[in-house]
Length: 306
Image 1: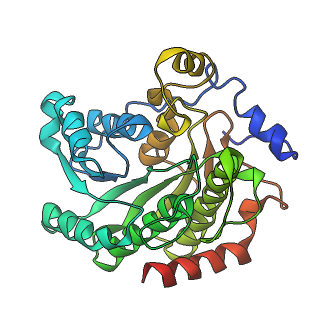
Image 2: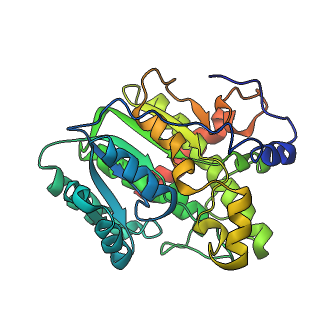
Image 3: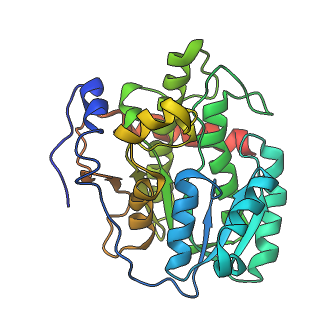
């Protein structure tokens, strides 16, 4: 479905993401099957990523799961039962570009001449305080935008990503609170960390649009999962965790938009899919549609990833 334009006021728009997400949230069908297809999911060992990975495995896919924490990765494998035989953990730190070549080499070794047909760029960070990546870039930009850019670039250069693959870029409608995305944003406090996250989600949308324009054979979509009770928002235990569970989606529900974009026929290439609004119709003034800024960000990422 395609919905009317979202509210013009960015704060009202952000608040409206909470409305009806439990009752009207997108639910991905169990078909088509993905037997014989290879998928790669970043951040696949917890939260929305784990739920997305499980959904792809349930449909028959073989899975490559990037992982920065070996212990968590092994725990994830142990939870999968027989499906664990179709999963390979691949070490990667999205906040350190030096880990990308080894990750791409490991992926190539596992594929054995095959190609990735579904790529879900899921991993993300919401900073609690100002920090930088190993290369000195603001941490939300470096992880959410540049790390994925470098990984995808390496796989394209090595021919590991199929020319007609699906690429799902997980964003967040909260991006509307910001106007720009750069590697050098500086801030203080929790509100600054939120804005850094918003900027990175805007960057995700810009890069998704540029990727589609530059690689027409791919089917690139951006996905807003809803407001989900994940580690982005702190602990999920105790009183705070109970409060989150009352108003936020669980990770399985949050994974439905990503799964929909990864599996369903008839998607609009370059489309932005929202958990409750479906295919989004954006106003011409929406920051996501700033082509010149998107092109400039792509060029900056090319230079930094190089």
